[in-house]
Image (cartoon, rainbow, N blue to C red; front, side):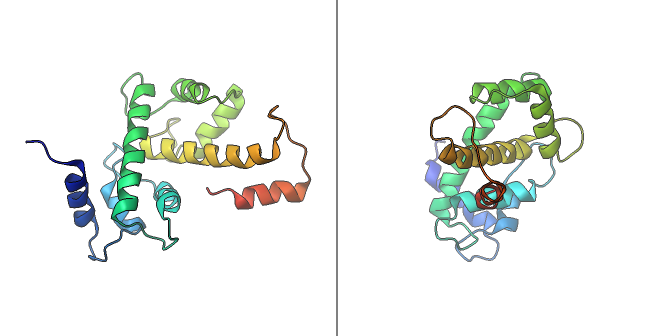
Length: 173
């Protein structure tokens, strides 16, 4: 039986909204998301997601924000599966390298290794789905900050130390 997506999402939202407040906090959202390992979604990723979709800065998301977040996560899940070539449920170094290249990041193996190490929460040299999302959100936000200064688009910026600090402080991670 076909079910309208909004009704399906509303049922999920209502089940996750345990306190019946009409909004979902980080703990409730974490319970709604799956990273494919039967472990809770990475708390840092959950907080990042709420930060991205919490339009009124309440620290929670309402149903309309939840719909947008769900669509975002579902889209990233498709991307994740397309790069998980061996269907292992995680992204290894070579798969991450391919993913980043396809997104326009031209990075050295050394930098990719550092990125992998930074976001590998399980210490097994791979990224699970929630870690993959967090990695890409952070890279996107850092790139956006960098692009504001790289006005001639040559991939280089010349900044003072305080500017660098401000870039990191202003970057939503």
